[in-house]
Image (cartoon, rainbow, N blue to C red; front, side, top):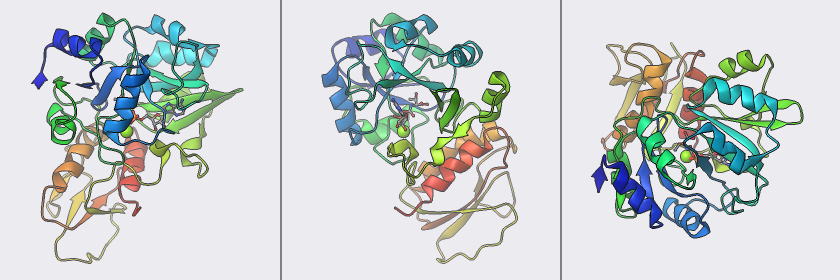
Length: 311
Ligand code: TXA
Ligand code: MG
């Protein structure tokens, strides 16, 4: 069922069910983060490997003190600046957090989303919500309630409809290691903005080949069609007749454009729904022009690169 009824969402969650949760980034597959049975269900429905930990979502900044210990000053600075919003922090976990949530790690990923319905729901609950993006493992993330129904509708009883996601790509993930600030995933807050606030350079560990978290896996966000990324102005030779070109901004020669006005915000909010829609067409090869290297551009290009990775 798709509904805007927050009470009904709470009822489902309180009885141990999973729901589709709207956030400003993408829709989540959400359930009680403190209940190992619920967490198991999330992994199962998403077909996600157990070694890939889940993000805990909270409704108020203060709740972080129940979930985390030894929070570094830099984390407090980022919380004050960017929460609520598309920023996830990796922090030392407290004892109440089940190991299943963090895949055995002593660190937990936490975020306070800015979607007003998500905040209202989270504030009404006595527990945080575990919520990975509500897509089957490795597929494109959902950016509206119908996307969740299309893919997981048979497995969950309820999707809270909060309209289309305003950001459209996942949260930026930041961790802290001694004095270093590490970027685990590019996302809705540009790394540049984080570096400006902290007055320090960050370490890009999302490129690290040794990392085994699938969010950092080479293939991700991937539709069924064959995707090729091309740079602006680069010529390309389509291998099949059923191929199309998606430009970065509106262009008379392209089938569609990622951004409607050239802004990276517009591009981010449209990216996943375009990839998803292309999967329902008869085209076999999709040539997509990369985003410019500003604002959310690097995060968009990161998704395009992973979406185009062969396996
Ligand atoms: O925008 C978002 O963050 C969305 C919405 C629903 O909040 N959620 C999301 O969750 O993207 P998911 O599960 O699709 O991606 C979470 C990423 C994974 O790549 C996972 O490896 C990483 O966060 N992660 C979670 N806990 C971690 C931890 N303790 N240490 C390192 N990475 C962690
Ligand atoms: Mg995901």
